[in-house]
Image (cartoon, rainbow, N blue to C red):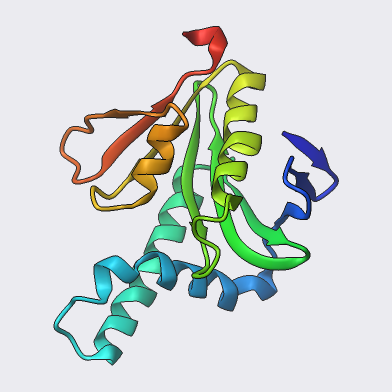
Length: 172
């Protein structure tokens, strides 16, 4: 991972990450809502109830991460200077945790997420000699991407999520 001040540079031309700012709140919520579309679109609820649930889930998730992981890093992914997604991760003493990697609609499947995983999460795991972990819902299409990148799925006890683990070469 190459940090340049408050930016992370990637190997994909024009794709960078910058630290989240307070004025990003509407963007962050828009990315969150887009990432939850599979879960919420089919719910037989009026839109105002879905909106309420989405807002509560968003606030609760951020609160939990910020208080559980003091080293939490929150980044906005940009392509050509335009925001296209976000990455939230923690570098803990024994592991790197990718809490959230989400792209805006229209930016899925064009290589930005793959580049971020490799150039940020995997690079940090290699640099630190730590395992990289994440989790996804069982129906998340990103599971195919993670499998192509050599990420293993692991059972998470008492969780509906699918655990993901990637070992840097030094730990294999």
